[in-house]
Length: 318
Image (cartoon, rainbow, N blue to C red; front, side, top):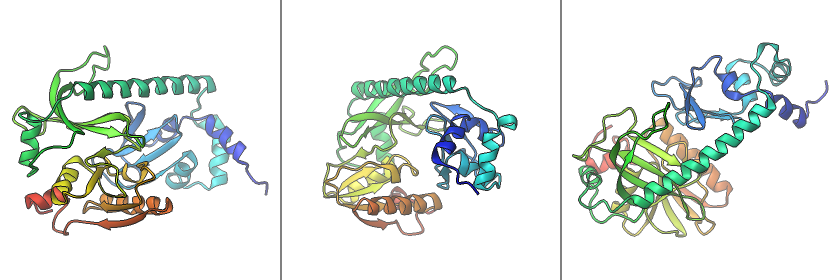
């Protein structure tokens, strides 16, 4: 039986948009440069399954499932690799995409990403210290005291754009965390939208990112040979308070942890994971990735009765 070459698989993959193939069985909605929906690999109520057409990849931030169009057809539709190849090669029953359309879409997505980074940098530039703001009230309500690192600020920024006109929605108070890439450049922000009283805003997801976040980190401390790495800003600030001499970094998302691009000087990473299945999976996946990079890795978790590090600080039982 003839071997299927990489060139042949690449050619048939290029004929199809991954979102169109997955969209036959999963309801997807546009979210920036990606599509999002409920994961077909596990049961969930909040969508954590993302599809990126320009990369030709899917990833679930809930269960960790990821792969390309072949992986999806084999896992979800039960096809063998050869059956998946044959189905994609014989496009009569599958949606296809024009190569020129794919190129145009890729250029548009590149432009959108660049614009999002510029918007994030502008929001960060206009932000200020949290002292006397709803962001300070929010952190104090989470038991986080003392001075904040320079990568935490406050601003009033729009949480959304009108999809028809492109106009910004009303500006809302927000805690803003800086996302720095491997070189230390701020290329994105994560916003926690708040009320003026310092509680989380009443919206579907009050924690939204802008610009580039994947591969980046919120640095609550300097580059050091040893860092503590966790998932969210609240946990990061909690750990910084608990270990004042340590340098704490934050991945800004469960599924993002394994993909952080760390500077070479960091040789030891203590992963402070969350006490839930996605958190432990992310910690295990990140551990494997960092060990492969030649770093020393240790994973720690709060006591099992607490869901995360801030819950331990606040005494909130899981």
